[in-house]
Length: 214
Length: 164
Image (cartoon, rainbow over all chains, first blue to last red; front, side, top):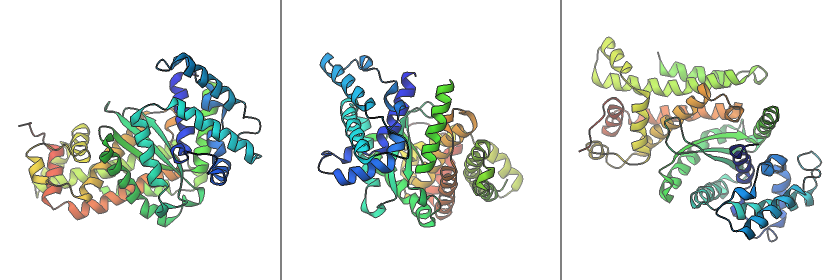
């Protein structure tokens, strides 16, 4: 697996969690358990850390790289039962906590954190309670070569055909544009779309199959 | 080509029987949704400059995708230069929606037509929402197309104003 593939997988997994919301996983245990169970198949995947090579993180010290290696090993150690229908609550939560630790070590870009925080804040707003499960975020230039952020907001399956959601989504869409611009991320174009939880799961399976075939 | 018909076509593709939907159909719907907003704006631009159908069509063909996205980018990022800055003033919310939709749709369209990686696949709900986004932009454009800001925007898509 090449590093780009790893980055894409990692971001697909980590941003779906809205990880910056939970500063203290122990205090938010119940909510975390529910969220971990509901979204496990999107992030609890071997591919999430498969291509991660701690040695390639040049800015980290030797001790930090060693810590990253250990975190990766612990996350990989949680895979028994992961990604299946029979996900057990404690296992999912344990994996989620390990994932948070990995994110804390890995995510160092201020811009990335800013974007993720803005998105998390908006989709967790009580006004849209229950609509969004998370988001997938990829930093990649658009066709003109300008820097862009491709955001896919993940919604619950039942919302896919909900007329109220379809009508009101445009307000959220515009709000995200405005918030990112006001937070100084305006240099990047923001390209957004929506998928349901089920669609995202199937898409990840397709990518996994094709990645393996390649 | 009627942009409203194009949008209806994109919506109808996205609302086909899910069992019949393939990547090529979904990608075609995304591409069609982009061309709906493209033709909406080029037709508006042509109509502003001539009352004669033949002249309007000639003018509409002069619009360039790259120039149009650049003009939209200036609105989205609020980096308008004179004389547009003075003409448009504070960017109306309706114009911001139209410009950001055009810009996003062009990127979606390029992915749909040229990026064959599976990671760039489109899903049904994604496609429906993209068509809905264009529908919203149509409605917002209707509110603003005859204002100074609307006319200046569409003119900036056709004519590059030199920096001064």
